[in-house]
Length: 294
Image (cartoon, rainbow, N blue to C red; front, side, top):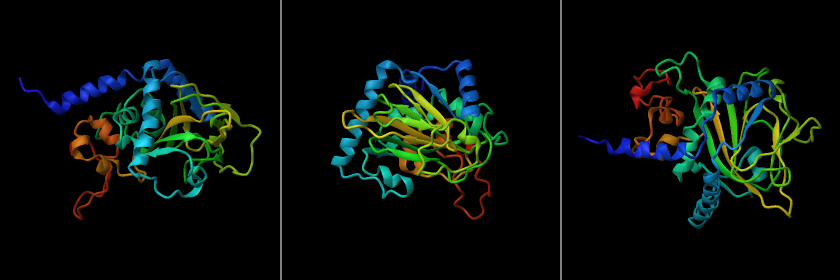
């Protein structure tokens, strides 16, 4: 009997990560979708299982310290990122630790994103599979407050969106230690917020360790500062976008062919492997590809 070592390794990894994230019921998924449609965000409690929460927080601290010792620094910040330039962060964390890579590319939270980001005319792959892509994946210890902003370069009126966010709390995130603030329903306005205004209709979205907040990139949101008496909270922050948008990072090249071979087809698609621009002048002009190109 011939055993494919790469696939065996993949299934062992998959079993491990599925033990980290709890399964969501169909009702939870539908209620989450409806809440996002109406208010622009939802919160799923205890999404990361209790026994894995401490592990992920420890890895966040260890990764930041290890990369700092190696002299690995984030690229020069631009735009609103300049505000949090002094916070402890690990950009593109999926390159350094498989725990975060697997969480970003597997799990039932992807079913919620599929409702908003999947292209119904994509074809070429099974219709139940996700056909959007990962935009960003970073760790941040929220010390510096962020003013109200949106995470998209193009806002449109209504609930349709091409970009969405996630914040997975690796420690408690409250209004005293860098917690999330949102303006419910602001994703429908088709407007950019005024970053100088402290909006009175904003609410706090308190997250306990292991909770995940999912929201439209058009939602007006910001974060609280961390008081001197409190310890800043770490979070795993994700951006997902429609397949036809320009990917912010070339994850496939950075991970390399050997690593990609250990992932399943849909994981590779989420990392952008099926929407790479052609490099040959005689190739098809379509960036939309199926699993047969992998």
